[in-house]
Length: 288
Image (tube, rainbow, N blue to C red; front, top):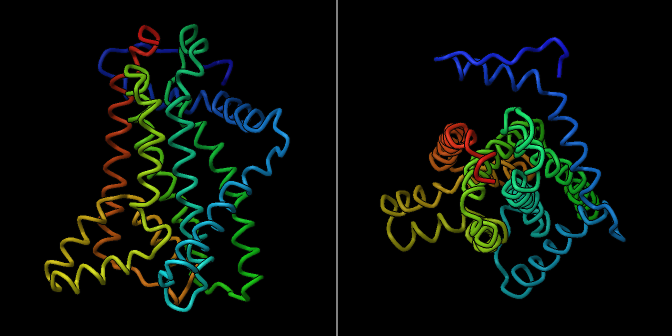
C-alpha cells in the first residue's frame, strides 16, 4: 500500500473510491496470498506434494472405476485418463477456491475487526492459493501426455483464456458464499456436501457430449438440446468443456450454445457476487 494513499469517505462516490482502494491495497493482497501459500501445507509430512497427490488419486480412482469397470466412453480418441485429468484440474481448482474462500473472512477476523481495507482482498487472495495448487497439478497432465504419447494441438494456446474463465467461475460463487458464511456459519458444513455432489453433477468422470447424446436420443433433437442447455446452466460445464477443447484438440468438440450459456452465467454470477459482497461487507466487522 502506498504511504501517500489517503482514505476518502465521499457521499455518492463509494464505488469509485472502493476500486481505487483495491488498487492501492494491492501489496496487502500479495502479502495475504503469499502467507496463505506458505501456511497451506505447513507442518505436513508431504508438504506441497499434496497438491499432486489429491488430484492424482482422484484421477486414478475415476479411471479405474468409471473407465475400466463401468467402461464409460472417452471423448474422441483421447485416453480416458487424460480426459478425466483435463476436467479434474479445473474442478479441483474450483472446489479448493470455494472451500478456502468461504473460510477466509472468518479466519482473518482479527485483521478485519481492527483496520479498514477492501474486504474483497481476503477471499480474492485465497483464490491465489488454489491457483498455485492448480499450476503444480498441471504437471500431472504433462506426465500423462508423455505416458500415453498424446500430444496437444494448436488449441492449447487458448488454455490461458479458459484458466481466466475458471477463475471467474470460482470467484463469483466464492464471494457469495463468503458473505453468507460470515452471517450463517452453517455454510461451513454445507459447502463440503455441495462440492461432493458437484463432482458427480459436473462432467468430470464423463464427457458432457455423452449427456447431450443421451438427451437427444431419449427426448428428440429439439427437446434434447433444450434439456442440455439447462444442464449447461452449471458454469463449470463450460469451464470443463473449454479445458477439454484446448487440451484434447481434435478429440473434443464444443457445443457452442451450451458453452456460451455457461460463460454468460459465469459473468452474471461474478457480477452478482461482487454486488452482494460489496453490499454486506460493511457489516463484517460487527457480525464476525
